[in-house]
Length: 603
Picture 1 (spheres, rainbow, N blue to C red):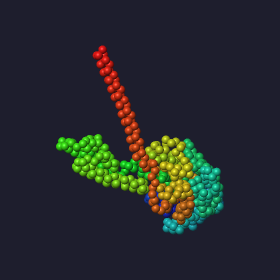
Picture 2 (picture 1 turned 90 degrees about the vertical axis):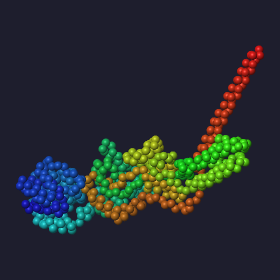
Picture 3 (picture 1 turned 90 degrees about the horizontal axis):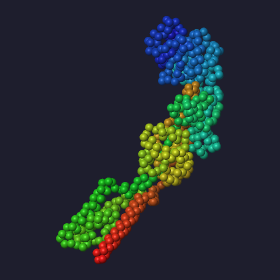
Picture 4 (picture 1 turned 45 degrees about the vertical axis):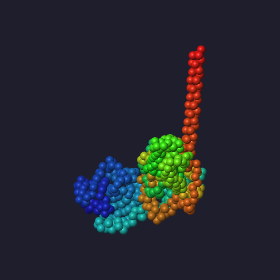
């Protein structure tokens, strides 16, 4: 029973409380194993029928202890299953029991067909020693490291060993100049001028950002890439991917040298080992003046002020009519005959527009009403004019949300990318969905532009362009003036997933790569590459506000009112001419009829 004590001590020293035992022991020994495991609070599963052993899942929430007695018949079936299903990984801690021998050549012969790669935790246990095992690459010899303990060691000795022993990643980070298959992406070979070409950052940005990071990993882990290139990231077709993801899915490459979005469909066929950057896609536009998106002539006053101004004008008109009627009862005045109700309304409207009146009555009370009305209208008009000037001169914040963009007359464009429609359609935000249905979908393919064309339209037109920030900023820095940079605004439409480095599903090098990339992030090497390839927002360095020129669009509502008034006047003129013609013909008809009747009577 010393073997059972050793097994439980070994796994408990690693804080493993779930164990699967592949053994062919006697019922008494198995019962004793169950009893001691229960006493040690270890959840135990014993498998004795090796041909019907359950599959080993390479991924899970918890680490699991795996015990295999190599003296059992059909033990090689368990080794083959673990190798084929990637059961030799960091999730499963294997203890291989063999009482007969710990000779290096014997271990190599026994495990010759097993893919025990660098992320595996496999220990060979003989009666006199423990040996840590892994191989750099399938087909290469096992690397065997004696741990310096035997089965008769105590738990304190094991804890001391694990405390002093470097991690598996630290011990195994020398891959001894092996060659590893890598896959990268060049979407536009005609424009590709090398991995360090900074002239066109917006073309294949993420492959160019990832390439030096992965080359540094190769140098750090001492291996070489057998590099291949594709021109697509990969799209699913009936469960199978093409492009870069497809190569990883078919296990034609071990790791990708191009970062891309972490998506659920891609996670089914590939692993992601480290995020490289957070990508933000926003609508970039030049904030329009308030008059471009709303009627600036209605903006100066609130509804209450407009109502109060209208009330004062109506009260003045009513008072003038009342004074005329009161004066007529006492002594009629010819100049007061002008103040009929329509004329009083015309006076009130003209007063608000600073037009005055064409007549000045001699009655003092009427003059007082007219003077006070004109003075009140002067104050209102002065405040109104000053507010309009302030609105036209101050920076605008007319568009601040997706809803504002949807309601505005601004045209919308989207960067031409592989995900140009996907994230709009998948967005849970109703405002984003509404923007897509109203502004983007009706345009069809005309809504999608290259970065250069889209940013050019932002500069020259009433246009909002949804673009990757870094790509857009690169063109903006090259083409915009300082004052134009200061007018730029951004609205984020949706959150994009993280951009990460992909790897073959259940790769045996995942932990090695993840650890070294994490180290690059901690020491600032990854941030350095981001600053090189991802352009930051250009700073606004234009000094002084200056004057804002006023265009047709700023006075367009006034011109529309003028045009509407002219149209109504023409319609009324035509109506008056028509009515006058009808009346004249009616009068001529009546005159002729009366003349005819008179002639008849005379006859």
